[in-house]
Structures are given as structure tokens and as C-alpha cells.
Image (cartoon, rainbow, N blue to C red; front, side, top):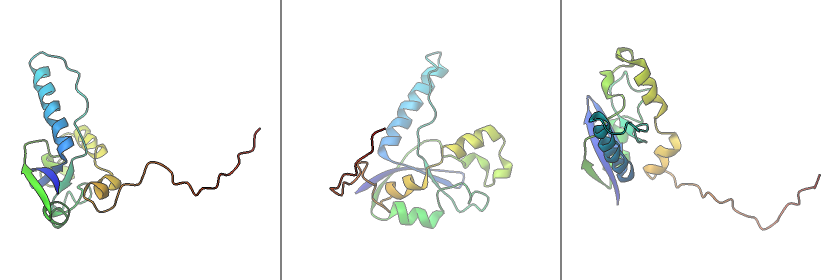
Length: 143
């Protein structure tokens, strides 16, 4: 059974895999250490964070709506409540209200790809990384 960690913030549901949640916990520890004078060697926030919302102003940037959340995540999965940053939750329901455009673009750039969405939620199987051989080798002419 698939497992996901879920956080709800300002009308946006964030969903991550256990692997990404472990990376988020590590990132949070390093962030706290940096705030207390430790090393400031922070990488970008772990991803992918899948986002779901029915807020009209966010339809063009979230992974899906609440119906998609129920279909992809709720049915047949173990869900654990968690606490992590949910992209786009700080927009108060509309992109035009974004107080910091740089932060918005950072969130937009780190959005999951469609392939990540489809493979993570089991909608398609990941393609093998190895090319399938037909058994016939095509000779390459030498220069």
C-alpha cells in the first residue's frame, strides 16, 4: 500500500512521499542549525511537493483539485498528517495577491512534472531506463 504525508495550509493540500518527507525533516534541521549560527549550507527545499486545491485563483499552478486528491491519494493509500511547507499556500487563493514574486517563481519552478505526478500516484508505470533490444544490431558506418 502506498504511503503519503499530507499537510493542509490555507486551502491547499500538500502531499509528499515518505522519501521526500525524510528530506524535508533533514532540511528543517539544517535550517534551524543555520538560524542558530551553524552552517548555512542549505539546498533548495525538497521536492516534489504535490499540491491540491479548489481555490479558483490557483487552478493553473496546483497539481490538481480536491477531487483529484481523493482519487490519487485517499483511495487505497496510507495517509499521515505532517507539518511542512505547502507551495502556493501563502498566496491566499490567488496568484495576484502574492507578496513576493521571487518566492512565487521559486515555487512554480519546483512544481512536479506531469511524469512525476503520473508515476507517483500509480497512474502509469515508470519507463525502464534500459532501452529494449530487438535483437538486431544496426551497424554504424565508420568515418
